[in-house]
Image (cartoon, rainbow, N blue to C red):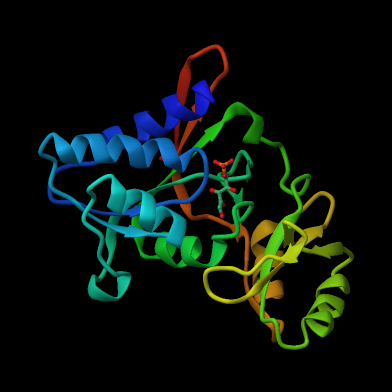
Length: 223
Ligand SMILES: O=C(CO)[C@H](O)[C@H](O)COP(=O)(O)O
């Protein structure tokens, strides 16, 4: 909790007047959004693209001006969380179910800043089941095709009901074990009809802000 707050707030320091930014989803991004709200109320002028309905609601309540990605060419930076981060800054995202919009926003971003607590740092991706967003149409067929990649998968549920994403799709949480080549598996998964997007963010993050439970923060920069 403390680590998440510190890292979210630290990431907000990268924001400058006039920027167009992306706002991520999840309990760590939450603290960044709260901090951005505070900065906006103190006079910072920015516009933001949210990565989920949940984030849009929070940001609007904070007084942050929201715009559509459709209306801009690119974003200066995006602050988002992650479920796993490997030493090459490959990520697994989508624990909160917002991976599709998060990946679209990340792809339009000059500088993707990831905020995590120390528990998210891993040597290899894969201990966290990979979220894959799929179409509801014949989803069991898509599941069988995905499982040919040697994984087992579960349809995500919430409160006993099938979890529906902001885009009206389902999510399969897929246990691949150790993921040796994140970029390759990500590209292969996205070739399957029925797969909308997967939660591997390979070679996208530029900065990772890590919060430690003892209160210190580490900023890892790809450059
Ligand atoms: O990818 C995400 C949502 O789709 C989140 O960023 C990810 O699940 C991390 O969330 P948290 O900061 O709550 O641990």
